[in-house]
Length: 282
Image 1 (cartoon, helix red, strand yellow):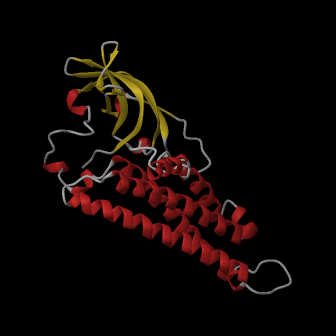
Image 2: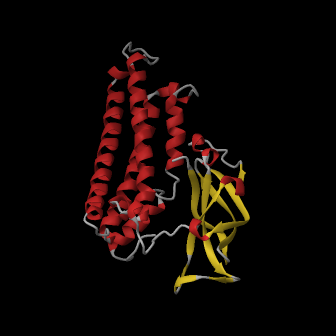
Image 3: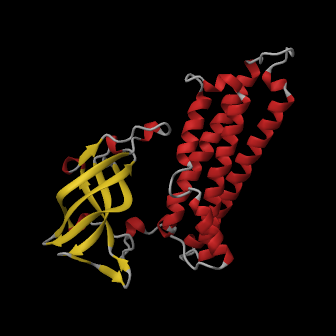
């Protein structure tokens, strides 16, 4: 209960098998929450001596290596414009010994009572992309709420003496932002529910289910970004002040759109699967 784990899924490390575990070295990025963590993990390619271990032809063995923060060096690299508070700094392991029991198995052949629930049957890309989409929708909803508060009090400069919320342009922008967020959220939840039903039955989501979930998460992020942009524009010059939450929403949402789980490249992958030119997702 007292363990807080941060880490990185990028396989930037090298783990050399040794007696009782592995000797691990590497540098990883995007370890969100590392400033609060007690332990960190980094995905590493497993080696037997100098030879890369393979799980099948063309597929190297990649395993998350877990270690206490005392064994790593945290680098202060997260100097960013958006999502500043995630603290997604880089970290380094230099010849760190990781016991075999802390080399985490992504797909263990011996599931136990701790990992028997349906959530643990969800595909990796679902658990990778869905949380990013949820964050994006939360930022977008916050921008709508902030703009509604502002619109009730602000009277924009000009001949008309009406408040912002009485202006037709604002009302159209608000309606579009609301529609973007609500429709994206509904599709995201519907796709996640469909996968969860399969997981509850003990099955595994097929390619089409996984692809539509992948696309729904990317769509939610893109739709959320458009909604925030609308609210930022609707706020006028007020949005640009640092004291305004709207400028922070704008910076944060554009940072979310760069996440690998929902970035623009995911649309190409989803389209390729739907077109039948690819038979697997990354």
